[in-house]
Image (cartoon, rainbow, N blue to C red; front, side, top):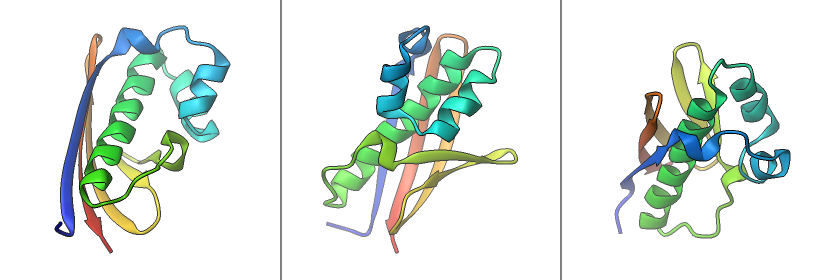
Length: 111
C-alpha cells in the first residue's frame, strides 16, 4: 500500500434534482447545501460534489482508510479552485459538470 491514490466518479446530474432536505442533509454539509441552492441549476453542483466525495472515499480506501461518511468530506470553493476539506490528507480535486453529467477526480496523499 502506497502513500498516494487516485479516485474518480461520474454521475447523472438528474439524480440530484428536487430531492428532499433529508436526502441533502445526509450527504452534504450545510455550507455545501447553501452553495448549491444559490446556483441556477443546483443539481449540477450537488452532483459534482457527490462525485468528489465518492472519489475521495475510493482513493482513501486504496490507502486503507475505511468508514468515512460523506459529510466528513467537504468540497470548499476558494475562488476558482475547489478543494477538499478533510484532516490528515492532502487531496487535490478536479471537478467538471455539464447539464447532464458530473465528474470528479482526486489525488490523495497521506501527510
